[in-house]
Image (cartoon, rainbow, N blue to C red; front, side):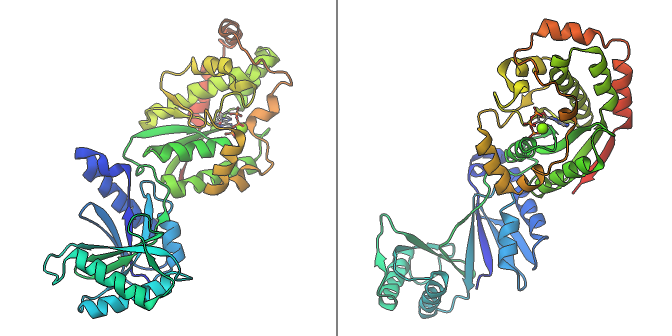
Length: 392
Ligand code: ATP
Ligand code: MG
């Protein structure tokens, strides 16, 4: 029934001079996303809006699903296009639309008409009033309510006439690539994929780093992280995933440092290495899935000690969320099922049963000094042997 979509975008409408960049990015990302849907589409910018027009028969659900993955899109309105063949034909089209677009014709409504073409023989108010009357005649269950209508029926007179009333919510946010790059510390858990999603939703392009510890962690655990990266790349676009072998560093820390400081010291080395890859990729910050108080390594004290090694800003978009909030998002974006697969991640193998929850920086620094002999070499080795996988 529909031949086009009108894309609504929120915030990006108010970005002043940058507006064109945002809109162009949104146009090209919408076009890219639609390549995954059955059908041919053109996407264009017109008078501060974006139009998607089908050039062939297409799969409606696939098209909507694709557009729901484009950050920056606030709403997607399916549009019926008709030729302009006089008011009578228009009224018939609007009645036909109302018949098909609603299961039951028993709502309050108003008609809003816009003329992009001023040569139309009636003005907007006249068209709206006349269409309203025709709809009331056609459907006894309808009622006009100009202040709080349940349905606003939009009629836009352009080269063709556009009729629409529904808006399907989009993901919101800003188009990816309009805000710079950041490096996501991606583990196989529930949190970090969500953290990546949320940061990308603000327009940030994402790369990722994963620390594994073969043979203590399996190939399946690595594949799980690759799968998670693939899942979020539907939203974030391509991701460079650096897979870093962390085994030797972990064993060395295990050997030289107190058991109860193991996790926190490991986390500090992860941050240091992540910063290295961030620098190489032109990232402006790190992203983690940390949330205050979730586990011992995420108390305020632990976060402070972990953060101490970083020179880049560390973004923690989940900081104030409860686990259940995070799970809800993970389910919505389709990462949850993969995240809960039971494969071990590198942290769970060496962790102490009673980790410090209030680490003292001085004491941590003292423990780390026991690593002086080999740690630089091991870090270099980890960097040199890292594998970079391009996730599309
Ligand atoms: P997640 O669900 O993201 O694994 P978590 O609740 O298991 O988080 P931690 O294990 O304390 O929390 O890790 C905190 C954050 O550190 C993660 O969200 C992730 O950003 C990063 N991280 C932890 N382990 C790894 C790893 N093996 N590789 C890359 N990043 C990691
Ligand atoms: Mg984890």
